[in-house]
Structure formats: C-alpha cells, structure tokens
Image 1 (spheres, rainbow over the protein chains, first blue to last red):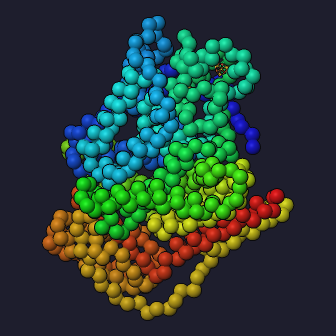
Image 2 (image 1 turned 120 degrees about the horizontal axis):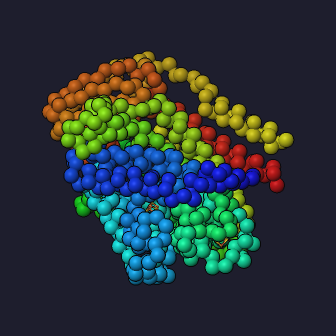
Image 3 (image 1 turned 60 degrees about the vertical axis):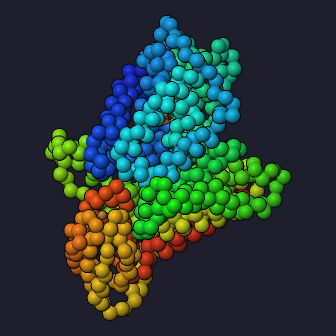
Length: 443
Length: 147
Ligand code: SF4
Ligand code: SF4
Ligand code: SF4
Ligand SMILES: [Cu+2]
C-alpha cells in the first residue's frame, strides 16, 4: 500500500515547521500539568473529585490509549509538557537556538543504559503501586512532580532528552505501540542524506536543534524512538523530511531483535490482563492486596505480578516456539516472534480502557467545574451525577477490539515468522489463548 | 478470487456466531433473594447468577461507610447507609453478564468496587470466544491459500 506524504500539504508543512503552533499547545499542556500537580497536592483527597486523578487517569489516559497512540503513534510526545522546562533550560532558549548556549555537562548517557530496560523498570514500579497511584491525588501529584524534576535534572547532566529516551515510564510503551500507528516521520530520499554536509538534523544548526531524541532521522526505520518533535523538519536544509500517512503497523513487518523491546511487549500484555482482573474483576481480595501497599498480601501481589510478567508469559511463549526448529538462536526467534504481541497488547489496553473510561467519564464534568473538590462550580456542572456511559455497547466493543487485535497479531505473527522462517502457528495459538483469557476477564 | 470468497464465508460465519438466536431453555422464573454485604471495597458475595426472567431481590447491607449498587445494563441502583440495609428489586429480563458497582464515593478504591451479575448462561463470552477461534482459523486458511 502506498504512503501519502502529509507534509506536501502546505498548511500542515508550515504548521509543523513553525515553532509557534507547537509552543501554544506546549504552554496549555504545561499549565494543565502544573495545575494537576497542585490539585493533587492541595485539592480534595477524594480521587474521583480531584482534577489530578480525573484529568490524568481518566481524560488523558482515554485520549492517549484510545486515540493518540493507535492513530498518531508518538503524537502525544510531540506535545508532552514533561521534558519542556528541562529542555528550555538545556537550550537556554524557548524558541530558536540562541547565540550563546548555556554550558551544561552535556554528557552522553552511558552505553549500558542506552536501551529501554530502565523504562521497563520505571513502568513496573508505577504499575505495582498503580491501585494507590490511580486513586490517591497526593501520590499522583508527587509522581507527576517527580517526573518533571527528573526530566529537568537529566537535561542538565546529559545531552538531549535523556529522560524521554531512557527513563520515562509512559514513553516506553508509547514507543512500542507507536509502531502500529498509521503515521510516520521519515526521510524522502536516502541519497540526499548521504551527500548532506554536516547532517544538521542530528547535529543542529542555526535553524534548530539536533535531534533531541538522539536518533539520526536519515536512518529511521521505525517509530519507536522518534518523538515527533519536528526539529528535523526545521533543520534539514534539503527539505528531505516527510510526515507520511501509511498502512497500520508498517514498522512491524521488520521484527525487532532486541530483548528489552521484546520484554516490553510482555510487560504491557501482562499488565493489561492483570489490571483487567484486579481493577475490573469482582474479586475484592485482589483489590485489597493491590491497594494495601506494604502488607504481606501486597508483597504476594507484587511477586505474582512479576512472576506472571517475567516467568509465566515469556516462559509459555518460549515453550511454544521451542519446537519451531530453525538455525537461528532461540533468543533471536523469541525477540522477533514477540513482535506479534504488540498489536495484541495495544488492543488489550484498548478493551480494558474502554470499560474504565466509559464508566468514569462523567467525573470529567464534575472535576471541570470543581477541580480541587472545594465546592466550586465554574461551569455549572459540579453536581453532575455519576452515570456510566454506553454500558450496553461496552461488551460488543470490547469483543470487537479483542478479536480485531487477535486477527492483527496473527497477521503480524505470520510476517514475523516469515522473516525468521519458522511456523507462526505456536505464536498464533498463544495469542488466541491470551485473547480468550482477556475475554473471560472482561465479559 | 478464492481469497475473496473465503473471506466472505468467514465474515458470514462470524455473523452467525455473533448473532444467531439460541434456544432459550424454558426455566420457570423464580424469586431470588441475595443478601449482599458491602464494605470497602468489595461486595460479598460478589458474583450473582440468576436465570432469565427471575425476580431478583438484592438486600444491600453496608457494614462500614455509605455504599450503593448500580447495575450496568439495567441502569438501576440503590444506596445503603452504614449499618443499614436497602432493597433493590428487579426482573432479570436481559440475558448476559453485567457488572454492578458502587455508586457512592466511598473511599480510594471506590471506582473499582465491582461485582458481577450473570443472567442465564454468559452467551456473549462464548460467542466472543467462537469469534476469536473463527478469526484465527480465517487468518491461517487465507495465508495457506495465498502461498
Ligand atoms: S517520553 Fe515521556 S516525558 Fe518524553 S515526551 Fe514522551 S511521554 Fe513525555
Ligand atoms: S539534514 Fe536532511 S538531508 Fe541532511 S542528513 Fe538530515 S535529513 Fe538528510
Ligand atoms: S528531530 Fe526528527 S527524528 Fe528526531 S525526534 Fe524530532 S522528529 Fe523525530
Ligand atoms: Cu462503596
């Protein structure tokens, strides 16, 4: 299928090339983010009436997982406020490069950390405390503030966006799932890059900064590590950068061979299933265990969580592909075939989030009028009653998402298996079993 | 061409699996009473099974703070003060599986205070699993035909 170059349209091209539209969104986002921190810290402790909980975990989450990631890949990262203060400090400028750059340490991130294991760990850390995080405004406020300050700190020590590339707990899975999106930023002509002097897209120039995500745009083959910050559109002197509309999951045709990315797929798949069981299931004892951090029950929950994600899911997967006889080492087959779990995991999250979001969306109205839970009524909606939305559509929509995800991942499995020349059947069976489990948990 | 035909066949089979009417077993409707204890952040019992047509009487008893019960799909609810009980009566005329959840903010985990009511067999789950199986079959067969 053909690609359509969106940057051909002058309006889009100019809107992306100019720094002002992005800056406008940045400022709104940053204000919202700081307000969420404050609301979390000083607003009502009742989660469902606090802006921080409602706007981060219901509104933002819904937009992220149901729209931004599936359709725009790293689109969220293009407008995310978290790295901004650090980045502005690091650059000594908010807009174009200044004449004199500030002198920060500008170190390179050590090689052993240049992968997404730290992101896997930071995501898991949040995941293990998620029941508390999702429901306690204070904790959400502290976590949001910590991310902001960690990003600032890393910007002053390391070059470029070290926080986004290697630490952000959200960035890890956005990157993984952005490969499925029908949007990409790529170069137009390889030959132009080969002869391009100075490679300003990577090294920066008067027109803009070298890629903040530390990728060389000329070598992009997948969306995972391009934050869609649009700097290279501004810096490339040969107009060689394009934003394309493309078929869904085009990046997955060439499966990854990296273990950190393979495990990210298992972490996300497992977390979706565990959340579906704990948060949306009828089992009170599991909710207690997940919520009461520090108790014996919670430690059991942590152990079970980690065992499912690091032992059970990858273990069964390995057993399944063990017999797909092949000259390639098992590790490589494991990493390549786990590509099939990427669309599956994304659709698991969609199905899970549909239920969570539709049930609780009416809190958005309340929190909009009374963000701190102090009895305000800014827009007259503070007393909107809680009412789940579209409850009769939910189950069919979830089935559609999960079965659609299964078809998508089975197709991906066939392609990945073709690349490493083994049978896709064990992977497809694995995806089928996981889907049945998820159906049982949600329906 | 053959690919198109088999795709059509699979889609039709999918529609049958999803929507074909199933014989409804004729079970005489009964009156079913459940006493549900609501406490932070669970119901016990939290899973109710009734037959289609049954009259369901839920006696909700709150043992700590104010809790309520709202039944998805039926869109009905009742609330109970601490130590008190409240009664919710309805005819289970919609088959399938429904979440019921607390509708009074009762503490941190309130949004996840959830139970499950199943009216008759949970057919939608079985249909969904059928669709998943069909999907896997379809993808595998279409691949075989192409190569
Ligand atoms: S990686 Fe994280 S902090 Fe960086 S832009 Fe994306 S979401 Fe924001
Ligand atoms: S600046 Fe443009 S032409 Fe030069 S290497 Fe980068 S993308 Fe290629
Ligand atoms: S500079 Fe270009 S390649 Fe680098 S993150 Fe930004 S948009 Fe992506
Ligand atoms: Cu309650």
